[in-house]
Image (cartoon, rainbow, N blue to C red; front, top):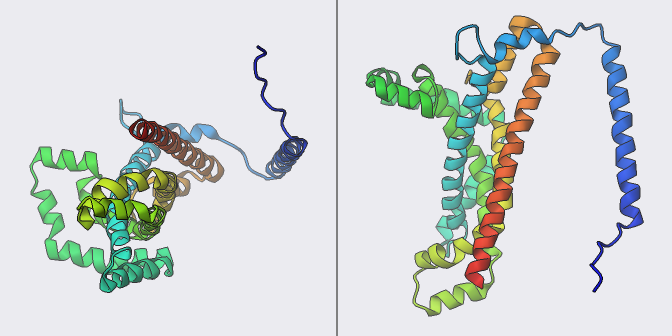
Length: 298
């Protein structure tokens, strides 16, 4: 029995690949000509202290900013997932008031500029919340192990009010998009799933917990992964409120060294590597979930 051979690629696909390769080559040649025409002297050695300082084991500003970006993105992603799921359940609720609240939240956040929301949230909500709870004094009153734990999980205790405001604002912004993803995942399930679980005597909460949400998660996961990557990129916006994440550290370093191209190209590469790692993790999680659901279905 002859081994099956892979089907030949269509001619249109080969032509498209050749066209894309030619376009990339032309873009590279154009970019090289533009860079060569600049009166700019490259000096990558200026980045030596950007990753590691002269002290042993002491990270530089770019690594500190990268770690802050990761922590902000993770906590904001968790908050956005929780808030988005709650608002999606409200939007799919049979009660009109809950649907109205969920719709109002989504429309309000999605139709306002993120930068305006960041400023409003920081100067009004963040500052008022920090003053009402006396966060500075409470953080400074923590024992040494508490401050070390806070530094590990979120950032320097001295910047805790700013970091907390950034997490809340990013979670609020991204939660509106997560709401629509979860709502679409719930609505994508067949009505028979609701009817069958109702026939078994499940309450609505039990239907969502045991039947609807587990199946919807497999359909929502690619979109949720993409939204989390957007959260990583959108975290750069909190640099305007002096949160010392990667973009803020790059601006400070660029102003101090005047190595604009080297620093921002490095930051571009750091964001690219970080998001590529998260994308790989999301694909593996999606494949693992698909295999698990396949075994359950079998």
